[in-house]
Length: 344
Image 1 (cartoon, rainbow, N blue to C red):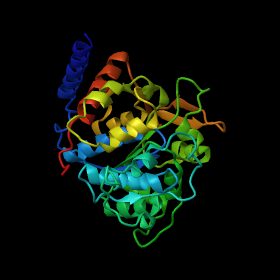
Image 2: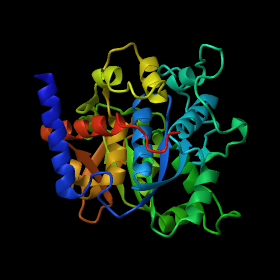
Image 3: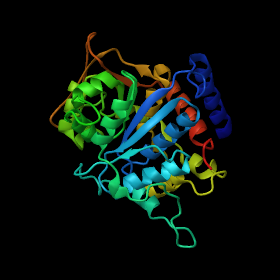
Image 4: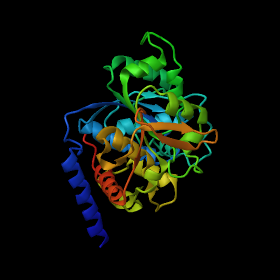
C-alpha cells in the first residue's frame, strides 16, 4: 500500500509538471541564480543544493555562485565538496566573516562530512579548492557576479540569514561597478526568493529571521526588487523521508548529502524541506504552490513576520494545500534521488 501511495503522489507531481511546463527540461528559459545559504545548520540546505545541481545539469539554471552565511571554515569547504562531487567544480564560493553566532545551534553536519576519512585515512570526498582562507567574502563575490550579469537577469535564493544581503546593499562603488550596492541590486537582480518567517503564527520567531533581525527588517522592507518568501509553515508540511535516504541511493557509493543527513540527527527521521521549497519556486515558479496577493512584509523587534496586502506591494509569500504538499514531496524525491548528470 505504501508503494502504491508513493507512486500515486509521483504521478500527481509529474502531471503538474507536464501541465504547467515546470519539469526540469520543459522550458527554454535559463535562470541566472545565486544561492545564499547557512549550510551546516540544518540539513535541508544540503537537499536544496542537490536540487540546484540537478537544475544546472538540466540546463535550467546558470549557477553563478554560492554564498555562505554560516560562520567558520567547514561550510565553504563542504560546498566545495558538493561542487566537486556533483561535477560543478568551478562554481565560485563566497563566505562570511564575523557573522551570526550559530555554531552550537545544531550538529554541524558540514564539519562532519569535511572531517570524514576513508579506510586508508584519506579524505572521503575530493575537493577542488586548495586554500579556503582565500575565498572572498560574499559581498565581494556578489558585486563581481552581478556586475557581469545582464540587467534584471539574476535570481537570488536566500535560505539562511540576511547578513550577507544587507552587507551587499551597504557596499560602495569598486573595481567591479560604479554603482553602490543597492543600485547594483536594483539594476541586476530580477527576484529575491527567501526562506524566512511565519505568516500563520506571529508567536513563531523563525530561525533565519531571529539570527539577524536588523538585517531581516531591511531586506523585507527595503530590498529594491520583488521578494517571494517560502515561510516556515510551508516546509513543515513537506518532509523529506528517511526511507528515501536509507533506500534510494544505492547507485551513489559515498554520497555527501546522504552522509550529511545521517550526521545531522540519528536515523531514521523525516526532515522538513524549508529550503528546497524556496529553491523550487526560484527555478520552477509558482505552479507548485499557492502564491499570495501582493503586499508588504514587516518584521517586529522580536522577529515576528507580518504580511499586509497591498496592490502596490512587491512582496508575496507561498502556502500549500495538502495535495500540493504531496506533489512537491514526490517531486523532491524524484529529483534528489536521481544521479547527477555531470558527476565523473
